[in-house]
Every structure is written in structure tokens, then in C-alpha cells.
Length: 249
Image (cartoon, rainbow, N blue to C red; front, side, top):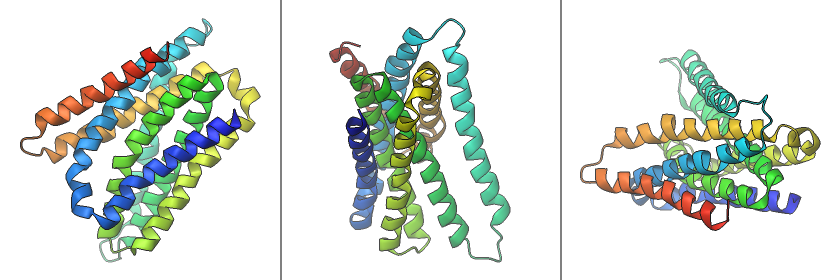
């Protein structure tokens, strides 16, 4: 099982860097398609939360565990994490001082926390069964690509050297491995709380889709792309539904 966890966590980490590597060499192309990737990624996250994680949590949860409460807690936890990062940024960036250092530190910190949670989600899903782990890994990979495009773009525009940008993102991606390994090592503890972990992960995914990705689509508001963006979001949801159905889940 550890092999599957490490393999798919590495795939998620490698995929997360694809978008960033593209922007290092083809910045205009990456920025041009990023809003389309946001749409598809939002759909895959919503599909995974509602078609896979929550049903699996419900089927395994004892009567005293309210999976929707834990999904809401996951949603709120991610909100509070982002609030703290934004608050910290606001209170440590002064107009008279260069904004480079706090921006780089906060983006790296935010990415590392996000990747750590992704690793926990992937490992916890594999502890239930392999098909659930695969679906969760695909959803993680899908939403990491456009996110890394955004992060790479910000760092490059802040004047960070390309090699340093790549190094920082490699280091933050390693947090996913740490999260996955720690979850596997605590498998005895985690197994008894798998419905909780799956519900919290669903809350994370719903938050990322609803608070980060979909607003980004609306903000870009690219002329002539409204239909394509809407189609890709629905396609992402449909793709997860088909995949889950084919796996007999």
C-alpha cells in the first residue's frame, strides 16, 4: 500500500509542476490556457467530493459521526488557513519596504500547507481502497496544475530567478510526500477515523473549488470563453462520475 501512496503522491507532485515548468518557457501560452484549466480542475474537485469522498465516508461512518459536519469543518479549516496567510501578509508588508521577501515566503508557505494536506488526502483515500486513492490523486493533480501556473507567474513577476522559482516549488511539493508518509505511519489511528478524514478532505476540495478556482474563472472573464469554461467545469464533474462508475463505486 505504501508503494501506491508514494507513487500517486509523486505523480500529483510532478503534475503540479507541469504548469509551472510550462510558464517558465511559454509564459504567454500558460497564462492563456490557465483559466480553462481552472474550470476543469474545479469540476474534478467537486465531482470527487460529491461522487466519491462523501459517499464513501457515509457508507463507512458509524451513526455517531456526522460526515456533513466534518465536511463543513474541513471547509472552515481551509478558510481559516487562508485567512491567516492573508492577514499575516497584510500586516508584514509595508509600502516603504520591498514586497519580495514576504510574498515569496507566503506563497511557499501556502503551497507547502496545501501540498501537505493533499498528501494526507491521498494517503487516507488509499487506506480505504485503491480506486478511491486513484480518483483522489487525479483530482489533486488536476487542480495543482493551474494553481502552480498562478504561483510561478507571481514569483516571476516579483523578479525571482527562474531557477529559484523552480527550487522553491520543488521544496513545497515535497510537503505532499511528508503528509502522505505521516498518514501512512499513523494508519492504525487514521483507519478508525477514515470517515472523518474523507469528509474533511471533501470539505477541503469544495472550498478550493468554490473559493479559489471558480472566483478566478469569474475574475478573468475572458470574452468568448464563458461557454467553454462552463462546459469544462461540467466536463470535469462528468469525468469523475464516469471514472467512479467504471470502477464500480
